[in-house]
Length: 235
Image (tube, rainbow, N blue to C red; front, side, top):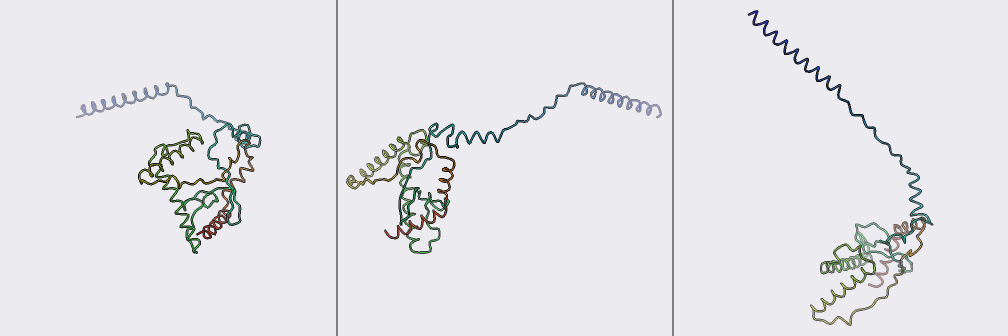
């Protein structure tokens, strides 16, 4: 028993020594391998104040480096002057629903009409808005050229496309119904003038003033009141 016990202890000791030697060799090999140098994060110095000054001088100064003539004009509203209920207004407006903000350029119906005047105006505004939406919906469904993006066309070409589609639509309706609608077309004179700024860019103060006027809630309230009185007087 003593001889077998001593032999097993010797084998176990040899295994432990072999494992220890292998472990020490691996540790030495790891220490010999060169470590990759730690890359420090590069700091980029940004001249934010200088960039702000350059941006202002390039686009927003009175004598800017890149006037609007360098770019294609988009989203520029025409000059529209009209008088209603004795008050003069210098911006046109779109017929909109309640999701739009209360700005003078979006005319909505009264959410909770309290008087007969407000109810008549809200009904008329909703009917006119739906007429416009349905008219464009019918045209877009019939002519695919109106359903695709048109930014590649010039303003004149877009106008010609719309007129051509309207004329073709009326011709189709005329042919389908078998009625002669040639004599009921009317020509309406428009007081829409040229673009607001054709050549010189507006100054920063003028742009801020125009933006504030388009977002003026008291002006929207006044315009809505004037339109309510106008619709009621002509009802």
